[in-house]
Image (spheres, rainbow, N blue to C red):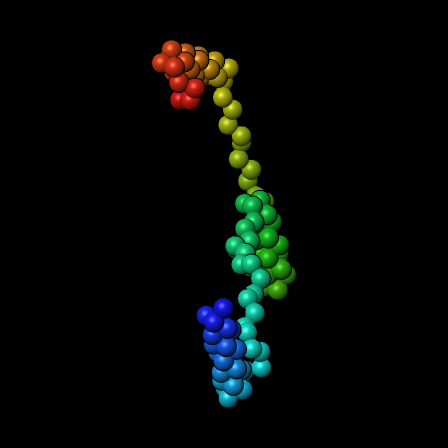
Length: 107
């Protein structure tokens, strides 16, 4: 019990000294409050960045008349042939067959 009282007295003394120090230094708040959670940098998709760039070029073009707005080229989506898909499926089945024969449930 004596230790608890001593700890309480020390804590009160520390708080009094901190408030006195804050008064001397001119800090209005006794305890600095933590700011909210930090967030990462906001990222935009490639398409959105292109739209933003085109809009900015258009704004500059209306002032300078030298910047031109180029239409964004769209990449063709690459597709796998049916034969390639079948080959990959066959190889995957072979890998799983080998793994299961070895008694594994994961590759």
